[in-house]
Length: 299
Image (cartoon, rainbow, N blue to C red):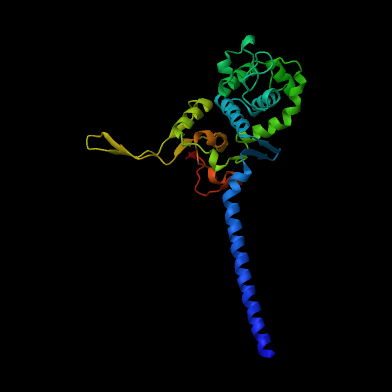
């Protein structure tokens, strides 16, 4: 009986060990599977997180938000102007570039060609429609000291100007983030299947159209020259560096790049000791001690 009991005990321990190995293997397999499908589970979107609050955006809304901040930068406008623009666009289009609207209204600010705002084609361009909004806003006397809904209504002349006021808190959140006052306040993500072919040169040209010619881009393109000082070969640059005069400007540029990463196939943005990558977009900005403060590196 004693020998039989010892034999049964050995069998029990053996089967227990086998079962444990199986459980661990299953666990590892499940973890690996979850790690692989996680980017697909999250879908796509952007998150704005500031000390004033948070706001979820889709990719289009985030890209348009970054454009508003960029045009404000190009025109040297204060943050309050951006707040007014955000509140107006939230009311008019939910920050979307609408192909149509009430009567002949089009675009993000629902401007009407028949009212002298410009051609439908120009008003469907977020850069041009934002520029036209700001041009009209700065003509409003003391617009910075007016109530937001009053300043916005002077520009838009809508049926109910008081409706803009409800969006002021969100406007302040967006302005704090996208104008770069609070760094690393926006991150975006999308599944691998939605990634596009890299078009970094086009992205940089569009960025300069948004921010203006003052934005300087240094490409680390290495040129090899012959003795006659003629370029013969060139390596493909691994990244481009956008020079910035302040960390705040740097974050406005970095967030523009992140919110436009999907259509232009951008994979990595680095600035001010932070890094965002398309592979881990949902995890947000990660620590990167080598990321410079005087440049935004775009890959």
